[in-house]
Image (cartoon, rainbow, N blue to C red; front, side):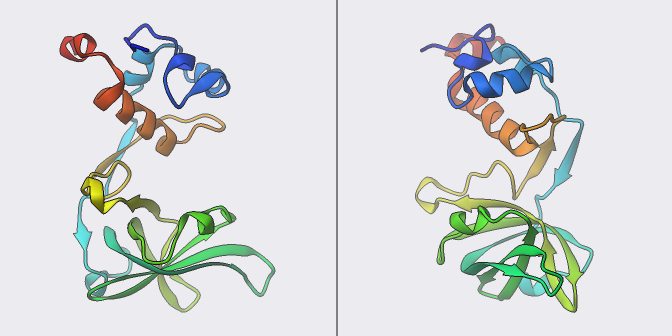
Length: 184
C-alpha cells in the first residue's frame, strides 16, 4: 500500500484502529497530521560516555553489553527491575520501577544504549529509569531514542513519545511515497 499525507493513520503500518482512536485525542487523523505533530521539547542524549567517566547528576548516553537483568523486590515490597551494563571501562547498574516486561527485552550479551541521569539509589550510583535502545550491530548504530537529540512529543493515554518517535521515523524514512517526500 502506498502512503501519502492524506492516508488515514489507521492504514499506516504498525498503527491500526486501536492506536488510531488514541491518536484522535491528539488531533492526529492522517499520516500528514502525524508528521506535523511537533515535539514540545528535546532531550540532549548526544553525549556518549564511558561508564568510568560518568558523574552523579550528569545526563549522558552509555553504550555497553547487558551482563544481567532481573526483577527485584525492595524491603518495603516494591517491585523494580535492574540491569547491569558493561563497557570496556566499567559496569553500570540501571533501575526501572514497575516495568517487569523489560526483563524479557534484556538478553545477556546484547548491546544496549542507556540515556539518562546518574543518581543515587540507596547507597549505589545508578542510572534511574533511563531511556533504552537495544542495538542491532548488523544494521549499524542508527538510533532513534538514545545517543542523539531526542524529541519529546505531546502524549495521551497509551501513546508515549517513544511510540510516536518510532512511527514518525518510519513515515519519514520509509513510509511515505517518494512524491510526498519531495514535497516536504
